[in-house]
Length: 339
Image (cartoon, rainbow, N blue to C red; front, top):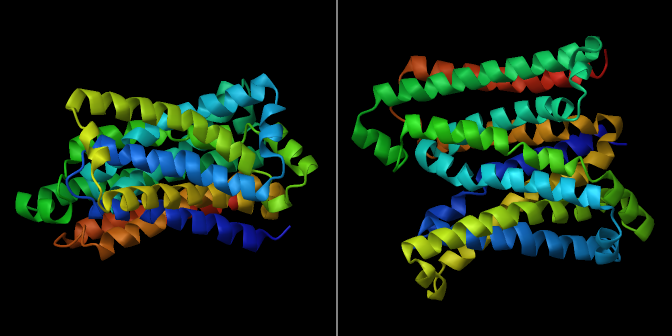
């Protein structure tokens, strides 16, 4: 067990989650559904499969030998994430990288803590002892941070004229963005539910000879199958509806940018599964570390990209306060383990 190393690896995953959308900015002349399909093919199928094949001996035997319940839970929760992930890009389009990912990741982190015990009939575990109550308090604090960041976004909308808003975020629309962010953030927590449902796959991977840091790779592959099914179905439907299949015949850099975005995105949850074994019995906070780091890095990136340029002191104070509150919620969750 090496808590520091595990936490840093998960934080690196958060960094990947914060910057994955940057390559999309280089895509010109493609419909959203077309480059999103390439992103999904690279990030949800090709890269995770290659990584798992390289690190887990007998990968297909490990997956094929899993019981139906494990596979269905991993794929089902992956599909739930797929619904949220499908709108993740829209959230960034309407709110920008900084505000969009701060709200989306904050909600994702909160629901990722609350929903699993509720759907499994163990809601009472949320308040069963002091440690559980403190953990629940960290979720409430996280939601408070989301409110503050959301307030900063609303203040931003009121302060900047249309030209300034469009210059920072071309399609900035706070109302649409918040609706998409709420849905996307909650549904995207399905990723963590799926990753935590594959214990049997991890045990099989260990028996097959996978190293401790790599036993989670088969789980990641199966969960992302569910996500790919949803994303691919929507993208191809939109291709048919918008007559945009022609995008795939174009020989340009869009292929590279979209695939790169997918690979970088997949790295965030690969890092989570790699870092968990090093965290030992503290691995339950791995998802919160990934999401919290994503909020931090995405917000800093948003500032760097000028998404908050021209805003007043009140707006910036709300943003900084919200980020500090979100960061403190992770600290509270860590402290809960020692109570």
